[in-house]
Image 1: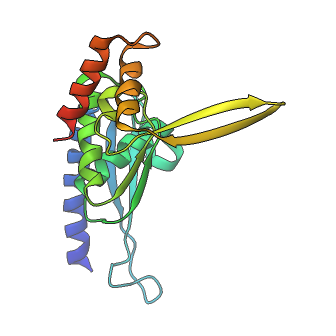
Image 2: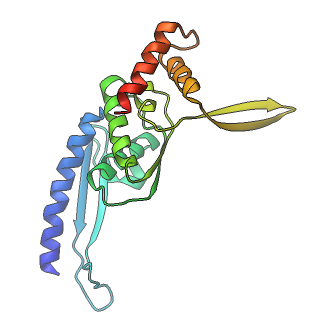
Image 3: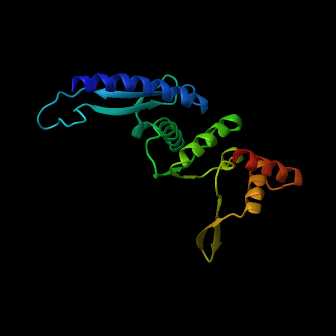
Length: 198
């Protein structure tokens, strides 16, 4: 049990550094991440083949703020980015489903592209559902769905439709340029899709 504890402490320190390094690439350079091992004295009731110690993740995204338990501190977007980083580092799970929402909050450009690449890596062995408004992230998807709402007779109806190849290019163009989508924008959207399919 003591040997397991020491291994765990060493790996927890390594994981903490690695997660902080990866979070910095996601425009969270001030974030602190700590995998803490709480030493619990083993007894007949709490000892298992996994030991008795408790491992918990602590996090802070703001300088000067002490890390707190992830479940109490992290926002939806921060949770999505933390999960993205952890799943890309600890890619042992296969055939799982991951849903990422608000992962693109406060990012853009090269960082968004980095997020898209990580999502695609996770999707190689898992199902990934990602809600995004950034073309740099959306262009990595294998398929796209458009969610729309309609108001009829004081009721709201939501619809989800899978987009054809042509609709994918058009929607990426809209994300890139707004409501006025020119031929040049559509060409750029097509190029982005083709580039990120590789």
